[in-house]
Length: 77
Image (cartoon, rainbow, N blue to C red):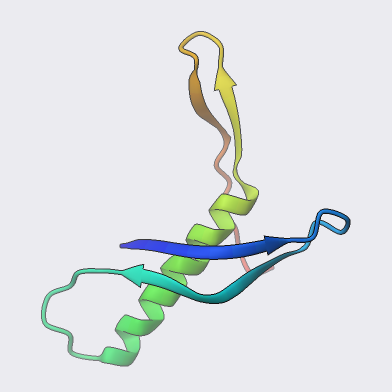
């Protein structure tokens, strides 16, 4: 799946809001339950947004490339 979301960040409070609609594209075999497929796509998009917001990335000086410093799993709690 690939997804895109435009977000708006309030620099004073740090709050983030998804602006308008998001865009996602996924491939699948024969869809038996379209509602389940839509829920899976929405869940994947939400997880991607959460990773983008909470994952800490740093530049590794040894290889001069971006490296993931914290890849914790986000939850609803």
